[in-house]
Image (cartoon, rainbow, N blue to C red; front, side, top):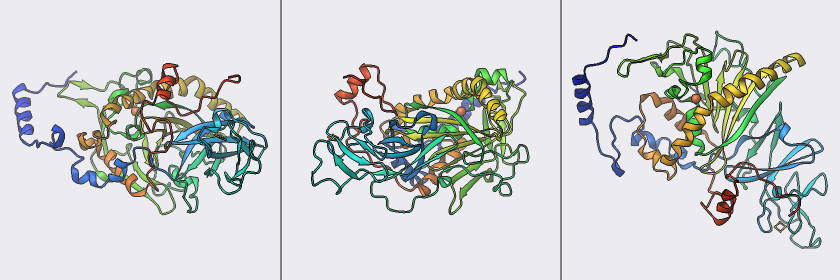
Length: 460
Ligand code: FES
Ligand code: FE
């Protein structure tokens, strides 16, 4: 270690000077030189208000393999209960809250025809395509039939993933294409965003793309999770990770932005909205490899040029990661205001069966256990541990961000400008009201609040 420790008197003087520049904020917090000044915060008020997520966007719902033909599964996105049903190969999505008395259809799916789903309680029966109430088992002549229904949601299934357009009940605009809520694509963006160091980054939408991944529930607000994904200062949490050591990675402690043009806004009319960070470019970023004050140094030698981007409603793309020809996508899908579904998906274009098999092999034995679980579990841990501070909403006012958080602030502003809607607190949904007796009973029985519906036992 060659770092010299600073003089203690210098440090004390520095601390005193900084203390003089501090100002009191409401609630006892100190303003200091924080990057999220009150003026800045006004520019992302929509984001601060989006505790239940951004609505009228495409979100991943399930992997194709999680929904067999004839099956129905219940999930929750932006507080909205949604039942997915696959009939004759096609996937449909309806609001999973019976019109009659509100039970979830997916709790005990009853599918009496290929075009309907029936509530297991009194038999309200809904058309899968439109959500219209087409019959009632217990009252086939009731005059309510044909006059009402539940919301249906557009679905796209592509390369092994099922996406749902989660919308407000009265959304009546044209449904935007899925591509507008996915990261930018290559090679069409090569000229704008050249990346001379590695091959074209694949997309979920590419021909022959294979999407392999996992999803699990994280216990924090979704915004905390998104921000962790591209955070330029958070690499410290990965420092002692086994894969960092095993690959002798020169993983910096942080990445300092020296030229703000290295954070490029993405805001094409018909395309995704967000921004891209040119981490690989030494003209815009320098890695923090040493901290003299704390006598720390990065030891590894294997550097890896990569680039990240994030687009609304919260989709991360890490190019050239974990390896060349592979891209890591992450979604942080709002479930309630304190849970999100954490999706990690690796994509590679595999035109032949042999390539698909090789990718699957590396996924099973390297990427999934050591990267998606091993490496990213550090992120999950960090997010869960931020939740207390943000749970009552005051964390968004009291946090003291620094210059290294410039990308976090840029994301908040972009999301505030371009999100299509702010999800309202849901009505009659678990999680909207904290700690009901039913939730406490479920928790005591070992059922954590979760994304997916746990079905009723066959015999009650
Ligand atoms: Fe669904 Fe009565 S609650 S039919
Ligand atoms: Fe991380």
